[in-house]
Amino acid sequence: MKAILQNLYAWIDERVHLRDLVEFMGKKYVPIHQHSIWYYFGGVSLFLFIIQVLTGILLLLYYKGSEELAFESIQFIMSKVEFGWLIRSIHSWAANLFILAAVIHMFSVYFTKAYRKPREITWFTGMAMLFLGMGFGFSGYLLPWNELAFFATKVGTDIAGVIPVIGKPIMILMRGGEDVTGATLSRMFGFHVAIFPGLFVVFLGIHLLLVQRQGMSEPIGFENSPNVGSQRTMPFFPNFLLRDLLLWLLVLNVLAVLAVLFPWELGIKADPFASAPSGIKPEWYFLFMFQTLKYIPAQVLFVDGEVLGVLLFGLAGLLWTLVPFWDRKSAAGQQNRFVNYVGIFVVLYVLLFTILGYVV
Amino acid sequence: MQNQDQPTLDHRKRDFLKYLLGGSFVAWVVSIFYPVLAYLKPPKQGEVEVSSVKVGKIEDIQKDSGQIVKFGNKPVILVRKPNGEFRSFSATCTHLDCTVQYRSDMGVIWCACHNGKYDLNGRNIEGPPPRPLEEFRVVMQGDEVLISKNV
Ligand code: HEM
Ligand code: FES
Image (tube, rainbow over all chains, first blue to last red; front, side, top):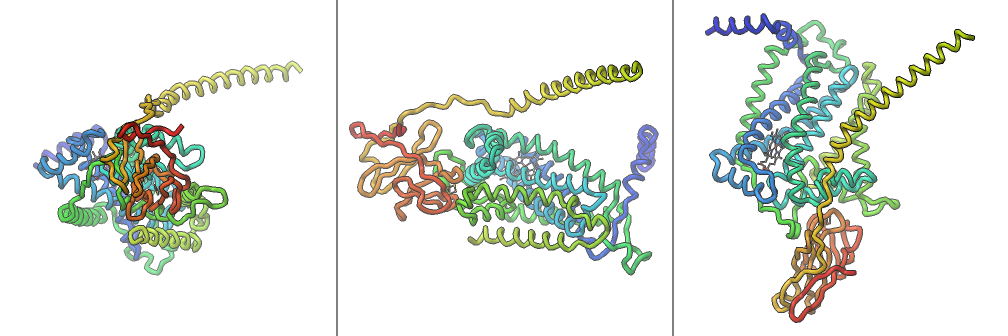
């Protein structure tokens, strides 16, 4: 057996020079310090994305993306297909855990300032994947074509429509027409299973390639820390990778427990000619923005409250994404407290308004 | 003099080529992307032009109740007030597009999405809705109730 494997390796190596690749994969070192735990969340996000691709492809075997059939096809998956309920429940739970892991990963990169030169591109591709992840969640939410998702999509796309000048075309692009109809479902389905995964994989490839090529960033001031010379790094392969795998196993268990004990609900089928039920809420990761919009008055100095809110969030998101450009101090190896204060403010704001969204 | 003239001519020739190449490149890019962008824009579907719809017999519609009626491909709400009078409005909330409902306990037209309220004249009286609901006309034809566009 071993001989066969060795022969196979030699056969491939002779043609494509695997040795270089193995060396490239192996030469990364992970710094060890009190904040090392945060290095794991990128890996967890990656693992959950892989689960999404696998379970998503399984769902595709039975799912039908049309107004007449979507809801029924998921009913079919959940009641007739063996373990269909489990696959769907895992896809829905992993979607939420994925966003959570990616958000934690993003904030940890922000607070350790790992985005600073020379890792700006890694940060940008990461942000692009986070936004795409939200796009995955938004488009996937409508696919079961139930009442809650129908109205949440109406509200969500209408909010996009309030942006001056470009809002209306964006709204029509997302809806596939003036209203949320079967055409919207087809579009969201296309975004969800083709366009977004394609884009995501491109960004993911660049992201991982850069992480591999540039190695892990070290916290500012790490070189001058007292335990220089002692063991401050561990090789990525195999030490860190094995720890990564252990954590993935743990995440998989948590996911399985959640998916089995709290199977994802389907609700009732959307009816475009029924009144909106109460309790229309977006997914939790949009809730802080949604809740903010409720507190902005209908009119602020001749501007519609909604317009103001959407523009402010857009601007905030843009500035956040551009942090490697406006934080010059970190790039020069100095502490930048201002960045920390901004970050803490954002974390507290998001937490507060998310909680308000649940209790109010 | 001669020597200086020569390069200018060359330059002009080179500029001309530059513009030609640049121009055809732009045209090439446009000819690829324009069809794709145009494809993404959904075609205008022939809207079913309805001028009126029959809802039902007067005696079948309870006082102090509301219902959503399919008007072409838009939802319209028909409310029968406690005093037996009929009113009808577009059921699409002017805030963010949810579908409203009649609440007999509050005596208003209510939107569940963000707790918006309209009075029975369709005026936005509470919550985020920025505009009143568009009014529809209720016509009696014998004992049948009809809704029609308010023109
Ligand atoms: C980060 C990646 C992804 C996220 C966050 C995500 C999220 C979601 C969500 C929230 C739903 C609705 C779940 C429900 O209520 O049932 C959904 C459904 C669906 N997703 Fe994904 N998804 C992702 C990746 C994928 C991929 C890669 C595919 C396929 C190539 C896929 C295929 C599907 C299908 C077919 C459904 C409809 C079935 C159902 O709703 O149970 N997803 N997705
Ligand atoms: S959509 Fe009706 S109140 Fe917001």
